[in-house]
Image (cartoon, rainbow, N blue to C red):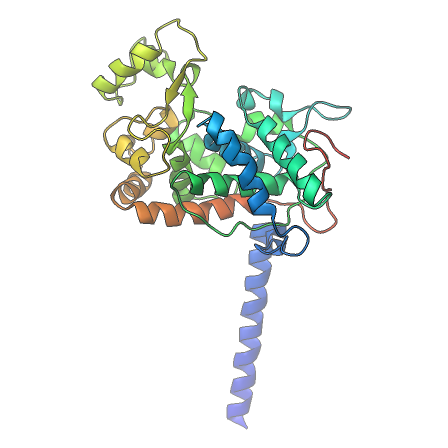
Length: 335
């Protein structure tokens, strides 16, 4: 009898712990528990191949496509959650996030529109614009030599935009480590996620205006950023002269600019990070981020695995699911 009572108490305690775990998980991930990698298996089974067909054609004309579209996904999720709000144009009651300072110069909207058109031809009213951003990010990372992962799907599109939130929440190239860490933490992302997701800068380009101050007038000192390798700084000054054209592009990774690999972290170890937010991951007193940079620099597989996990976490930020939001017929406007 005593044994049965003890067993009953143990089972009751286990039930309480399990319930708490479910509640905590739900509160942290919100509706993300409703997302599924098989969401379109019956309603649009060819979704991945359709998207891949569009982006492969786009990449033939522009090697920067991967960096452009993963940036849109990142910026989308940091504002109102992953709801496709970054894709909305100005309209009655909508101040487009495209016009936010943090999104000035963002590109790739035309490619998303092409993907949406192709999907509407095969499975109209099924695939959300928010899911397009998540899927195309995974496809392009993989296409450029990076990892693959099972993208969680089932997001729906928001009916509003948040320009103010875009300028408040999206990290800037000039943010110091404390500020950018805080912005990530506010979205449920930790230091490991910060360093891993920053690794997306292993491919793509950046405009001179985002880092020219590091070359000539860092923090208003009239001197260059002391953390930049001298030879690297000379190379950058050849491309970005003082008072030169601010829209001139420079490779984020000078070593392998179009490949998704771990050279980004090796560059940081050699003081060759292009953006301030990049180099500060390594050239500060933060033992936390420095150790993670070293990990990824020494082990590309570790970086790939962690990047995939962090991309899933990013995509799980406050998604709209079920009957919330809508499936836009045109990503630029609400239905």
